[in-house]
Image (cartoon, rainbow, N blue to C red; front, side, top):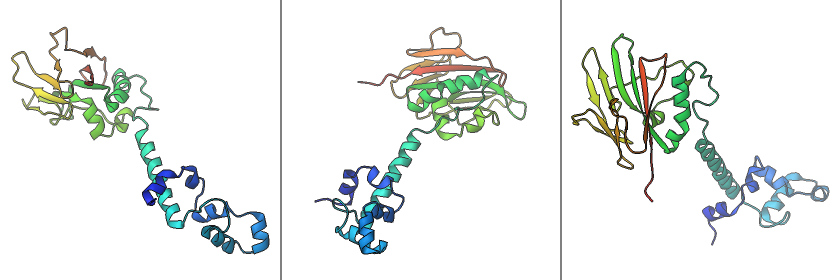
Length: 237
């Protein structure tokens, strides 16, 4: 037995998407001959709805509305799934830092890559601060439209993986959905990727930052120093 859900699943999108209203759907099955003999469009619509005109079993108004809603929901979900990147269409000329972020936006959003950004800079109070940022996590929790539009600057926060204010000596560290912080290491802070459990060593004296990880320093005018650690995640089979 078909129910509303089953009917919705068995009907192609074009059955409802090509018609703006239920009346348009009924009208599509009315012929000029029907109108000639009936001389009443409303009566012709009623006959189609009752199955006396048109082809096949007609949809009831409730069925049409349910399928129309389901189709619209699917269309919206598909549009959100293919959402335009925040960096798309932005003029990033003159900013190697923003271009580096743009190059990594899609793979970090999709989970192909998890990048850690080290930023050393000055805050609005002219205090020197530095921090390690989970880029993928920030992309999910912050609107980067303004950052790529150059109306807002990406800055380290006390809520990031690691944060240090060089003037006040304030120091914080926080785990994120992608990384665990290992702060009690004698050679400095380490980060463990939660998916593959690989260690990312951010010590600049180390030539190898870890398995599947690359380290690149980005020339920048926005900050004193920017270093990006790109960790390629390998899913378990």
